[in-house]
Length: 383
Ligand code: NDP
Ligand code: MG
Image (cartoon, rainbow, N blue to C red; front, side, top):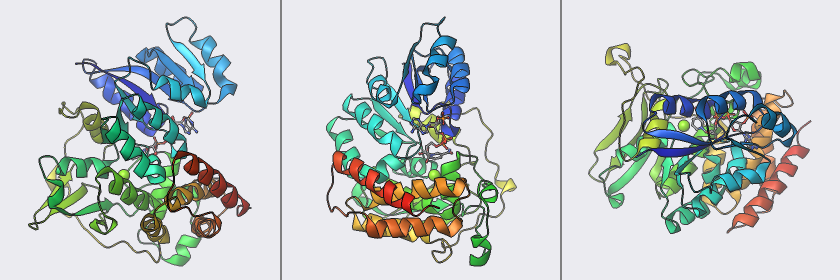
């Protein structure tokens, strides 16, 4: 049966790769909704090619242009953040692929879950901010949260046919990013251009910086905790620079299952969309002799303190991960605009975590308020 997909963030790295996957499987998937923040040019191209029923641009400044450009086509064009919350609930939408970046994905995903839509989740910040709430809502509404993040797709695949109680440990692999071998003084001097050159993955700017600081791995540990209902101490991070082993699960008898493949996001995207089936992947296959050495090492939290900060926020729980996420979003944006250095990111997060109001338990309105408060505190530390 044809699945009709709403792509939140279709103009981004994951969004564009999702459209490639859909183009390769026209009998299995159709595009129902496309959305972007401000890249109206690409959105017009995508809409003209994939014929969605709805197109949404969050930044209202471009709504008029978009409406005019698509006026000859049977497409409803909407603008503003609230329109996202409406389109995800449209009756023809079977699955929402959440590929917006940061906190912005949270509320549309909640609307989609409440409308009973299947969720293919790339937007990990949604689970970092509100993992308890999101997983509870998904359970109540009988909605699958299907991971798109490659590590979580790997874990999800390793868990197929297994019993939850028999899982002992999950190992999340990390490439180590472009600065894996840099010492502290070299790290102090890195530029955003160097940080944006990821050795194995090509991704949007925010996650690429998160990968360079290892914050991405911290976010992924929290994401795994909620997706797979794990205790914090059941999750370990291991650096694997070749990005071939995407993650591993160890069971109570000591057996370990891993999922391998070339670093290509189209594979986890396809699996999340086709689940529980597998469809033919039209991308290059892994060749063992091209990779005679697959190596593994421990992450270094002295040089990359953001990973340890994230793990500590997870252990504290409540709104701590939400505060940390907001501070990180502000700090990464400041790094990307040359207003702070590499370790400036860490300092902003640490100071924000100390000042923001800690709530041991939180619901949606508290998360929204914590995000707002943390952003404003974090911004006060940016030059
Ligand atoms: P990009 O920055 O490449 O794309 C983000 C998309 O979301 C764009 O379409 C952008 O629109 C839109 N967007 C951004 N902010 C808003 C907003 N406030 N309101 C509405 N739309 C918005 O990001 P990626 O594709 O790299 O990442 C998307 C998510 O997937 C992130 O959460 C990331 O952590 C996760 N992820 C990404 C991976 C990757 O390989 N890229 C791997 C695993 C997870 P516009 O183009 O107009 O700015
Ligand atoms: Mg990942």
